[in-house]
Length: 287
Image (cartoon, rainbow, N blue to C red):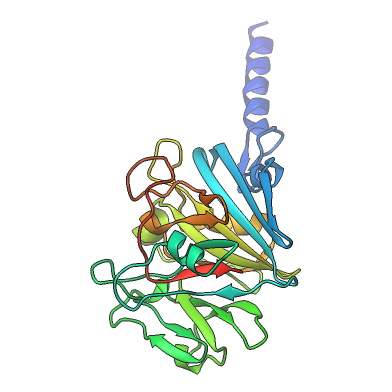
C-alpha cells in the first residue's frame, strides 16, 4: 500500500511540473498569454484624427509584468499626408508649440539634443541642408539608425551607412537609435543601462503596407513603469513592422493631437498628468 501511495505522489509531482514547463513563448499547457498576444488582443481606445491618421491608447495592467501606458499613432503613408521636422539650433522647442505652429494633425518629439544649450546632438539634414553633424563622442549605438524622407515624401528607417550619414541621398534625415528592427528582424542590443532599464520611450516603425507607427510609452510613475529597449521592440513586432527606430525618450517623450493638446503623460514634472512636457530640439509632425 505504501509503495502505491509513493508511486501516485511521484506521478503527481512529475505531471504537475510538466504542465507548467516554461518556454520562450510562455508556459506549455497553460492559459497565460505571451506579451505579443497581450498587445494584439488589447481593445485600444481609438480616435480618427483625419483620413489616414489615427490616435490610439491603452493602459496595460500586466504587460511585461508591469503597468504600461501606451499611446500609438498610425499614419497611412499612402494618404495625402506630409511629414515635417521643425527644429531649433539652440534653445528648446516644445512638441506642442512646434505642432501648433506648423498646423499639424499630430506631433511627437524627435531625436537627442543638448539638454544644456539645446540643438541636436545627432546628425540632422533637412531639405538637402545639413543642420547638425553628430556630436563628437556621442554614443554610437544611440545613433545607428535614421528616419529619412525622400524627394517623393517616402518615409524610411535606415541603418547608418558605412561611409557615414553624409553619404545618405535622402534630402531629409534624422539620426537616432538604437535601431530596433531592420529588414524584418529584431536586432540584438548592447548590454547597457540605457537599453536594459525602463524609461519613457518614443519610437517609430514602418510596416509592409506603408503605415508609419509611432509609440509613445509613459514611465517613471507607479501607473506607468516605462519600457526597456527589448520591450519596446516587442511592441513593433506585435504590429509586424519591418523596421523600427528608437527616438529620444525620458522626459522628452510627448504626443500631441490637434484640438486635444498633449495626450500622453510626459514625465518631466514627475507627475502622471499632461503637464510635464519638456522642450526639445527636433519635433516630428504629420500635416
